[in-house]
Image (tube, rainbow, N blue to C red; front, side, top):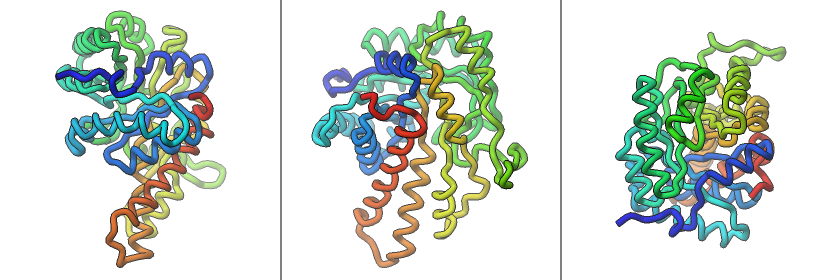
Length: 331
């Protein structure tokens, strides 16, 4: 029996994106796989009064179970009220790759889905995206499509090289598919190791920094589809203090380099109204857990190491909302 997202107290992205485009900020889209991650995301967004998109990948559904995730989402909307501020919450499928997966999520209470046909030939991407849009819109669910390919690895999504989005294709794609938002490729990348040292340059302090995002492509896309909601995937900044803690306590994260936060803030002031962040959260939790195990090797209560990990994640996301995405105070 199908469950409507409205029964779960969720919202779709349409009004949120309209407000973000007009207001020059981006809605945070944070991935979660377990209770502690969801707690941290919701606490951070309530404390900063930010709307939020809870993202679930196909891998997360396999890991946590689709039924449990649906009930966690229902609990999320009740939890934010208990925390004292009723922020809007979206439940979004991240990188759906088949019509069947998108349909199943829609039927199980998701308020937004992404259909990623970017790996397909253009016409196949259009056809698949349009099919998902038709089903989703019949249930008032918003749809994100993608043009261009991001390099890197995240869950079931992997690509060795990126392909920049062609501005010449966006009008045709948006008009023929009917998508509500469009994920584009302008130099972001999945995972913690987004760039090789050879791809980077050294700044005045001798620190390796990645090549700048292709804002020229973003500007061209904005000219072609003015005011249309744009999405950036692979937008973790890979905080070097978290990488250092992981490596200090036995980790081996070599050449972990992310997207500079000032570039993401610039993007958020444009038509980019949704920015996806996952790896930064994984790093924050892993750093806190490694530190706890190193300092308290006799600890075996999961609450004693998952609790600090949750708290560290919350602080990272509060910072993102306030200083990077500009979404604080927009709920």
